[in-house]
Image: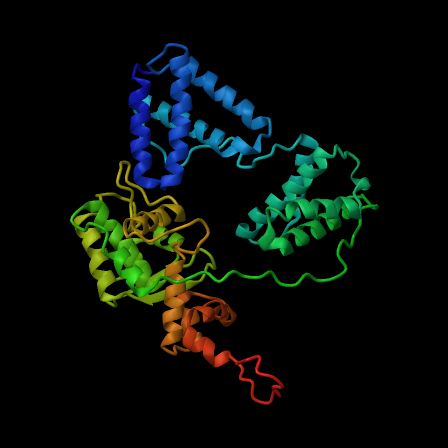
Length: 412
């Protein structure tokens, strides 16, 4: 490695992260950097050293392999920072993504890993659904690993119900998915010759899970958020264009991140793109405010790059914003600057723009078909989730007490 001070590299890494990570994530990066710097200081080194770097890397990998879930995220972040420091010391730009040793908290032994992978290959679901189902399946095989159950014929109803009770703590909102995966695993194992595995685990259908009603942005909050980006700066131009585009179109964060220059039809003042979630093409009118903000960014703020995506990173090499979290972090930044109180899982996320759009359209008595087209929904039934956000429409659904004999004044 080149002889660069370790403190200098850490400062560059943290400065880079502060532009693209949330405040909470930056805190994790700072802890990872502190651990690395403390290790260097403990052996009296102040400059990059290949052997020391590898020593920290090996120790961290060993901790991850010990299945310590409590420090999993932090340990994985140390590996990422080590790779960033290595790139910096050797004069390479930071990468959009760094290799993760293992994206799962728990390590499966080869015996259980084989069955987990085989089961994954047997599933015929979409790519996005596959990831969540496979994660639950891994949890189940890890549960068997903890029980040291090497003969899978010993799986019984008690084993399955005990796992369901434990898994419920992590999947309270998707119990149906857990049940579905367990049913599929039982069928899968039965087909593989484990004939004593129960084929019917729950003889009844679970009730649909309750959906929490998340809020939309109030008009005054929306105005406050949009007033905070400094459009005299390059970053401010980009951030304002992202926010105003979301507020007038209801586009998802991932679709804004993937938006290409060719998707904008300036002559027709419209945007045509393929939705990441559904794979369907959507054409939306481009509001004059959004058109002005996006054009201002493209002409006076967007870096000169061969990349065809509209919104790019601020640091070289200029690339598209890596994923939907990069877009979401833009909103988080200006929500805090607006003084809006934001707590974990309170619904004040980028998706609140879509909820705002859905509720506004309902308030203006827009037809369900048109709302579905604008928001890119495949079914009109999803409009039900916006109904609680529109009090005037919700009142129409309320039933009166007409025809109900009231024997006392309990309703007064």
